[in-house]
Length: 512
Ligand SMILES: Nc1nc2c(c(=O)[nH]1)N[C@H]1C(S)=C(S)[C@@H](COP(=O)(O)O)O[C@H]1N2
Ligand SMILES: [Mo]
Image 1 (cartoon, rainbow, N blue to C red):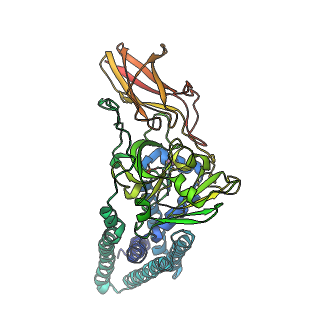
Image 2 (image 1 turned 60 degrees about the horizontal axis):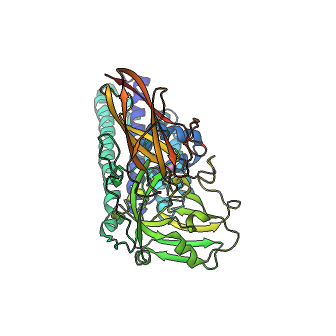
């Protein structure tokens, strides 16, 4: 007889994983139907993300880049599977300890849902359902395992098949229902369809045409206008907030003469304008790719603020997203002549869902974490001394002007270009100031001027290229930028925390 305790424990662990998995799937599937904007898993994930110490999150973003969410979900699945395995073993040995573990998982889901901005009565049911399904399946499985353990030799085979069928069947149901949950979330949420139905009006004030030659067309160099599909994505939203544009409104509250509220249709009816603005993330390392340039269509925020009547004493606007995330933007940056936009369009299309559909903020010259609120629903006029935004609570500075920066795109790091004349090219940016010059240096040689492509505007990055002479062997190539005021890029190496990295981008190449 091989019905040893350890073998039974393995089966119990497998059964526990299936039970936990079915519970999760039940929760997600019911959430997809009842509360698409908030599921138990996304709620727990958001709580963990919000509570993560800044450096850990920073490390994760640095390590996984924009795949941070996928990596996080894998880690979460592993934790749930471990809890499930433990629940299975416990339930077999000391019932109802396993059921209690599953119940606690459900309670964690419920508690997490309760903390979220999108919470509704309907969003409370899925975690309860998840726990109920998990516990029922766990009990059914351990009952069968117990029968197998206690069976007479002649019925052991049948009992064993019973266990196998239940675990296998449960796993199959889980996979199918899981796929359904994923599919129904995508299918049923009308934000996708609604976005397809949005027709943006033409800009009353179109962007000035992109100057000829703004894109040097060099292989390996990022395009000067970033396609939306390639645009970096950074946010704390584990699942993209799906906002119905027909129901969306933006409220202006706080230190204003009168609160105002604007709908999407009303916003589209305003005289919209278009401009190219380069967005950058404060977490971008020197030489990194968390920066992109797009043509944004929108209405200047200052018009909406003027309609509300900003009161004296205010110096900040706290913008809030549908999912509760906040940014603190200096009032001045939203009201001065830089044309901070309530953006509805990106590169001629409605905003992609993951870039803030239906409306986001775009403020030239400021890092995204203090300005670029996606899925924006409220602008609260306030003071820096009264309100603290999401990332400032986690150690980042309350104001985040973009730092003068430059990057080498080609040759790529560690490349082996042909010795002799080699083209080096990259990007440089100093949003809302503009770039005056870019210089490159080979090894410890002198600085050599690069050729600048014509800039689209002072709010966008510029491409540059330079021909350098490389003798055969190892070399470093370094770039620095000079902004329109004549300020040279800061050479001191500083980390991204608390207000953006500094230092020069250097690549190592081996000329052949
Ligand atoms: N709602 C919401 N908006 C957000 C964020 C977020 O986490 N949630 N992240 C900000 C940060 S840190 C950056 S860098 C930009 C990135 O915008 P993108 O994803 O469209 O490139 O969005 C900003 N807007
Ligand atoms: Mo960011």
